[in-house]
Image (cartoon, rainbow over all chains, first blue to last red):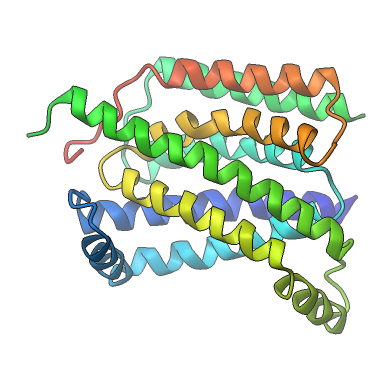
Length: 125
Length: 138
């Protein structure tokens, strides 16, 4: 089903890219050290002044509505594990977009996650 | 300069909030969307009707509320921990989703899906044993 594939693509790619933009925005905002509600609200407003945050929110919104669409005709226990494919996009993005070091151990873990998603997909048919 | 022990503790607490609130939100959204019915993105007029049905559902708002708690915890933890650490470490949520979906929504989860989810969790276990921050400002 083409539309199902498209929805999953949007969830994984737009959702993950959006999260990476948000991560970049939060790093620019600085570490949250004060957890009082007023300080947290101030942190949110500081984050909203960062351009990357808005790109992130927009992309995550597309991912979210795609998730709602898929959940209307597929089981939650199938949809959510398949969205774990975002680990591949996330690791690549973390490495190349955010400049994070991804160790061999993390890559191994990420590969196992991919194998798990494959089993979930095989188990469906 | 914060001690690594304290850094790990506060990262753990926020990830715990994420793995509880995220799955609960997903299951609530799934329950609500099943009530709404299958979504067809075309024609646009049909999409408008779907939007109205979706956003007048109380369960959707409970799900969104739960997801907002998840996102708040996520954003806070991302202010000091690396994205490529936080995202995999929180993936234990996949097991919580399947557990909630089978017990609460009555979804049939085939054995191979459970195995797949277990493999995902094993991957998470490996990833979780690395330091939360690897960038210079972390």
